[in-house]
Length: 260
Image 1: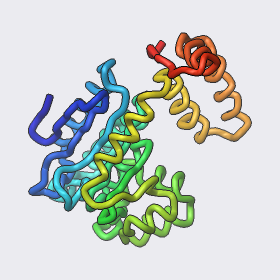
Image 2: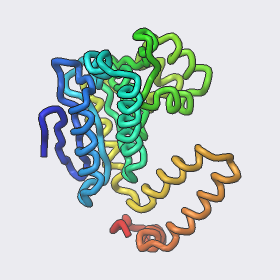
Image 3: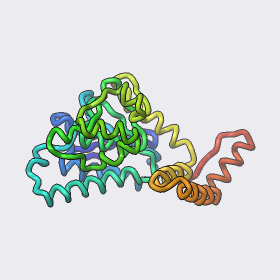
Image 4: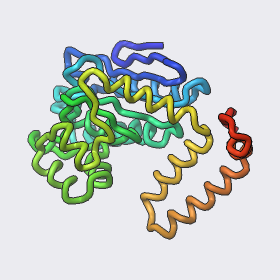
């Protein structure tokens, strides 16, 4: 399945979703955001898809930002609505229930950085560059950048990147924990898909519950997070996958998970 600005390909249970506007360095306009939302939702609803990879067409950019022409024409009320719409779409990625891996090739700036932050794992090529340059336009990040970046790299580094508007290279992003892995140029999608297949081989319900435990737990005090984890652990223990996984371990064989 495909559309003009967003392409989807299923490879061995992994949905490769590609932002396809290379002439605009894959910038996110309204049409592309809407297509991205539909592609992610379709992959989330497809029982044959166990993990997602989001990337951009070409070696120059993952997503180089929002469409500045569209931004410049927004009124204050339209700007608020635009930001809320983008946040809803990125929250849909973050809370999908299946792991979503960003394969970052080239620039991930502004909205592209925010899209990468909404993914659960980020794998980047050596030529990747990432940043939030909104302050250079007299704006602040509007798709969750002020919130997610600091949660991932800490308040100090998050503020430094947000307030300076400067981008950092792949090595530095990896050093501060923003990128999970850095791979040779042209290998990000391949590496992300391989990791997706590894995660897809685990218990699907357990993966979904682990994503939920981390996502919800980080938003509350530790003691409350432990309560959430305990409840989800108990829920996992009711599943057929739990019975199969423990039985397979005791029988020294590979588990055959059914996702229930």
